[in-house]
Image (cartoon, rainbow, N blue to C red; front, top):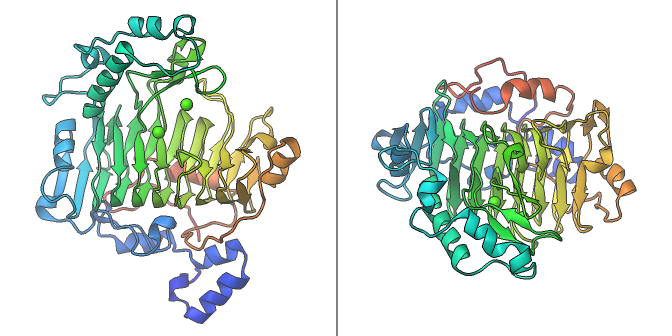
Length: 458
Ligand code: CA
Ligand code: CA
């Protein structure tokens, strides 16, 4: 068992970090799972373990772990969840235990709300919208404006008022084990908040009833939607752990085409944007989704230090993640790029806008016709370093494969070295099997341990 680096004499630690490889620094920083689990009294009051990714930097991430008594809420409806997130002090520690799958598109009495309900009284109708902005009438040079676009925006705001829920600082939201806990059609938003933990939740089919047509997006225009299942905007110290994200049961294959483009009702699964910083995304399962994870929403975004480890990406089209600007560490993730449920693979990781990505000891499953040169993409300014990545079991230099086939090169060196890498495994070979048991919602128990045998070894 390696010694955690924070227990090493300071002089030795510095020597190791200055002279060792990326992996050597990380292995010394590793905290075995069993040790980290011991520190937490229960799942609802657990804090992020030491060294566990960027969210462990500085004061670390404790969420609502200090909450007790009336600051611990158990909710099973949207109304109860909304109340729990707004009751009392905005900043005192708060734990919200989610029991069962909460449908967020409902009114305060729990009556389901459909797209027609949100549109009622706004003047919006899809038929009128399509007529107004058909390129044959409206052209392709300017974004929609006028009565139908205003009505669409009003209807969209009415939906947002139900299905978007803001998460305040010093909060833990955690699914109660054994209840199928999660959000159906909902969007948790951590906006300009600090110190938040989101664990053991299944997010499904977060969808926008009112996609917006933008003829200037790309060469043929695009339909864009507004909501991510989990959205971090200007958020700091966030730990998203053991959650599941999927479009199911509303798969993209059911989206019609309008104006020759997919009428896309989904946006991101977990987007980290607007100068968000110090985020750890661990042991999540992302499946059946297109635009999975933005890190940075524009090339001028800032900060964006994010760690992704032990996540599974399966049936994902793109952005796993799309990284801009920040220092991003990906280790021990499993990417299965096999087409699934109609989600055709485009790429896994994009490094652009000078992003400094370290990707090491990850594992790709590629179908027979898959090309290693398509696992990455970039704009010619991004970097990606790191070794020990496996493609179908073989150690592969992802950057060399990409650069050999693409004119916009990815730089193979970065300007930093990760040290916050708890549990980093220096072989990726066992990840598809182990993460099949340990990633996603529904595998943690009330004690914070895994329900099934954890095969992680330091
Ligand atoms: Ca778009
Ligand atoms: Ca988004």
